[in-house]
Length: 340
Image (tube, rainbow, N blue to C red; front, top):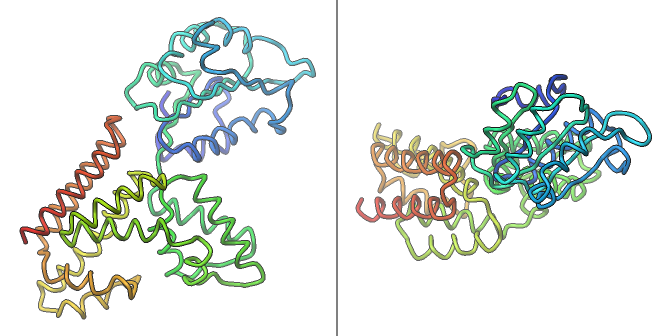
């Protein structure tokens, strides 16, 4: 069965007892690992127990498909239900999975992690086609999910976070769940003894390297500066920034610019329209934002947001080359800006 996005958290808290095999796939490896551990702990509390948690290499299963069924049927030496965990899976496991699901008499929970596997694949189909199995996509977090992870992590350390600090983190942390949580933990340590995390704390603790690169890419696109954009994209690739995170940051900027363009169309001075934005525009990007407010019309911003949305959907649904799609969308926006 396919687990819809809105149902994933509920499934992780209380997995369906009839589900004996779960596939986690997609581009966010940190989120994939976090979700897989949550489901595994519903069966085995100590994931380091060598008798009840068995790890198989995907290569081993591809070369010997019966090995998966044998491990799932084997009884744990210490008793109790087992977890059979296969990492780095791919379509080559589909035959072994279908064979396993066609059998009865095994009680283990089988978990398969398949990084970068597209939604349309033989392995995903194998899990979605059987009621005793579940497939869960794991893709970079959108803004709301990033904010939730940050707030939960800080709250566990007795910390609150200022709105402008949370906005900064949601724009600059990227979409990888594991990285987001690790950076939030680092921020919590940095702010130990305080009650509230400020934007200055967030910038100081997280480090602004990727943030500056992300700002350069987005502002370069909407300023119509292809050189700045190309350099920023190359820098972000080198730092491992998710293409989806870049697209999300650009979409957020486009939505804010659209609000400004609407205010300007209604007679507001560009500078006043920019200052009225909430959360406020950072001082170091305000001049660029005002230039864009004078250049971009409401209709043009709508076209830019459409380009970004289309690229985002293609990246998430087709398995197309994400880096290329994100770069092409931003370069197209730079072209729109130059023609304005």
